[in-house]
Length: 328
Image (cartoon, rainbow, N blue to C red):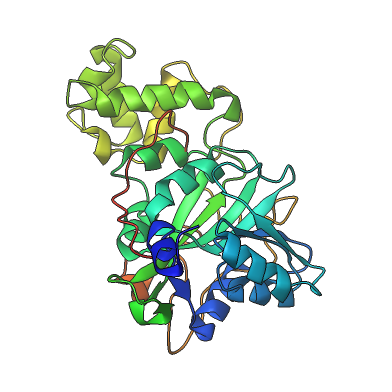
């Protein structure tokens, strides 16, 4: 295995060392007694420690053999922490419902999101990512193909911004918490997930720019005009201008997703513990190393510590989110 400096560069190893920021992350996640929680890229073990002290059953996942060995030694007497030396992109995920609370490797943020969100077991994830990625993914409703494909099944929001000074080695950019919560009920029948993804992808990646022209073979123009009026968007709308409720409505109108769906503006169902329900309203309260903010996209509250962003499911290939691998 390469030396430590090379490993840190290859594996995007920038460890969160500010304990107040760690406590804010874990407290804000709502994870606790009996929850199965994955700490992806466990690194120095500080997040795993904080989770275990709150009663969670933790899988500390670490790809670096040297760090995994240190974690095994550190947690040898901690029955609630299991060290898993593995690549999260290749290892099997738990069969039972689980959470993620982690400072994930930024260089593979999108791949990790695919790994987690394309499976059935994730109930909620609170993940430290680049601040720009958190803003992009956590903005409710419009803009990207990935969000349009994931949001019928997951709700996205943002938590506290975490300054670069909270990490060692110090990265060149700030980070923020991205919050992903499984919808219950979903907006589209999970059995229709593949069809829905193909439907939305056709609109985003077609040669014709507007939604109406891209989907003309599926929804005739005469029908599309009334549908657009009913769903609240213009007949000349571009794909990034539609929100997830509008995409879901379009898909159902085209004959897909006949299963149970949620209302247009579902009430906050919270994070899910094993069976799905949250123990308490999540929020991030921190001092010093991490700015303070409540999450958005979960309860609809503003995230002032992240510039007041508004709040914001399976594709057949990886689409870049602009991550540059600077921090873990």
